[in-house]
Image (cartoon, rainbow, N blue to C red; front, top):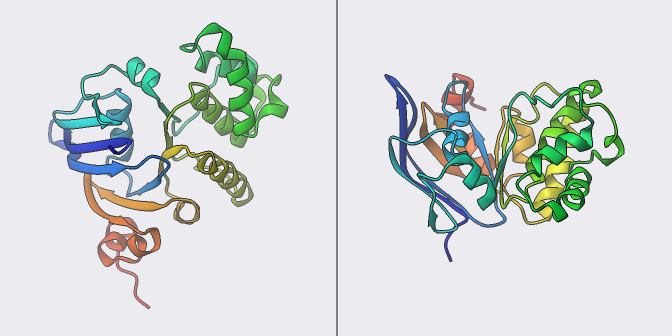
Length: 239
């Protein structure tokens, strides 16, 4: 059986700036992969390559065994790829429900309302459905961004530093939400600087630097690796 997602030798550069360097890995159905690396390591660019917002210079991207390397972003969304962004930008004057309805626009009309309710429930935001998006806290704006991504019923959900800027208590709330999505069988790629959050949820961890995969494997083992510590923390941690 083919993995849900596979990258084969994917490379991308902007002049001398390399954001993906012969990147290869697989994501199995129902698996949660965490991605760590310093700022500028190419993590968000990797998501852009998968979602179709960027095209690779070389290499192949496959979804469920199907080549999607040249597929436009809207077609990839229809095929089951959803994502959140580092900075959520809702339509501030619209309600939470209306924002999620925009996210469901590619679905058949008869499905949209039901799916919006499902997405808001999964994101833990249903009680705020009628609130104006501009009035939301940061945590709820992040939940709204998540609900919009879920509105398309993705098979692959990509989270880009969704816990960034939150308090410790808010991060714990978000971890509970993501664990719920994992229990639903959703395949997830989660980029995050809050390593403790990743390690508590993900099945596998991948460390990257300058668009290159440094190491992947069991989360705690990856974070204990001296090379990963040097890349991520700037020095090796002993003792």
